Length: 105
Image 1: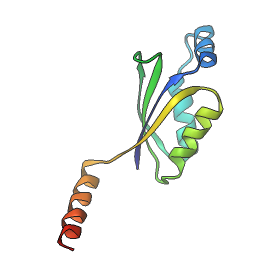
Image 2 (image 1 turned 135 degrees about the vertical axis):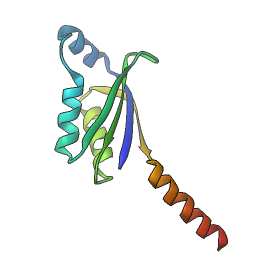
Image 3 (image 1 turned 60 degrees about the vertical axis):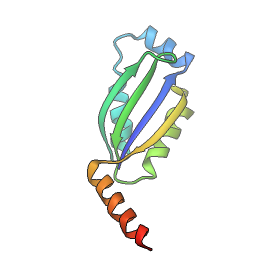
């Protein structure tokens, strides 16, 4: 299952990034996601609403996504975090087929 996690870096995290400007945040994200059995799909920095991040990842267990989110927040890395379930186009087709069947009921 695909998820999108967005958020802004906390002041503490920004200070750490400024003190270590060559640090690779995507490696940290990849390590956490892989520990949950998932795969990092992509990660982007976002300048809007304060320096932040947009991460897209895939996990086989849907409960892993909020667990990942909770760890990131508890570690003090991100604030104003939003976790969104993403649907692949194949999943959208399945939803539409199910909706068509339910509509007849």
